[in-house]
Length: 130
Image 1 (cartoon, rainbow, N blue to C red):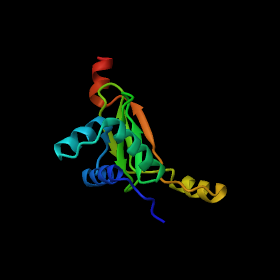
Image 2: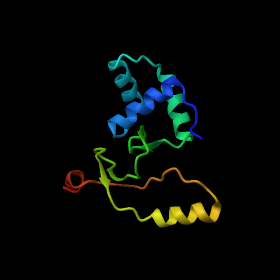
Image 3: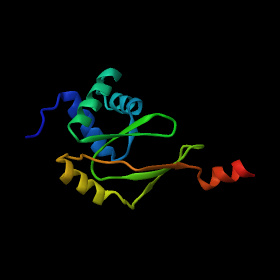
Image 4: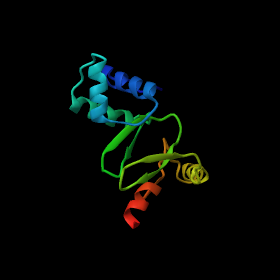
């Protein structure tokens, strides 16, 4: 059975799905205002938390500590530079087999998983070691 969503949750979910990229709560607040859908920042955070519990939205923490949110359409992994913050998507995923095993062995429904690698991009490493 599909969980009942509040109007705010539904608007936020539709925007995240349409954008098809990760966005911070503050950026989401601006996006909603531009669409003349005024929702307070506290309501946005509550709605994002509810949508995460429903398994339709995921959160990812950037190297800066900022959280970004996106709809769960597929697993997406990243390598992220801790200096400039550039985040590059990677397509390989070595944990799908582990995810299947965990679901089976522990009778646990996995909504999504994340895989992040942090380091220095080529541009930043040239500046750091020059």
